[in-house]
Each structure stands twice: as structure tokens, then as C-alpha cells.
Length: 46
Image (tube, rainbow, N blue to C red; front, side, top):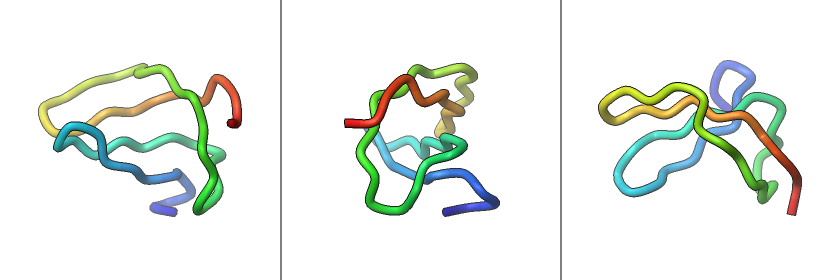
């Protein structure tokens, strides 16, 4: 976790998603995108 957000990497970018536990797998949607960084919202746990 990074500052309370789950952290992942996808296609060379860092993805931050709030309310995700370490090791948890989720389906998420990008809310904000910047070069190298994505802020996402969790849609459902898998």
C-alpha cells in the first residue's frame, strides 16, 4: 500500500487504487491518467 492506496504496475505505468489490500486482485477503471501514472477506481474484487 502506498499512502492508503493499492499499488500496481500495468504496461510500464504505476496504478494507484484506493481501498485495495496487498495481494488482492481487482477489476478497476482508470479515472485519471498522466504519463507513467494512473489513478483508478475499483469496480469489483476477483
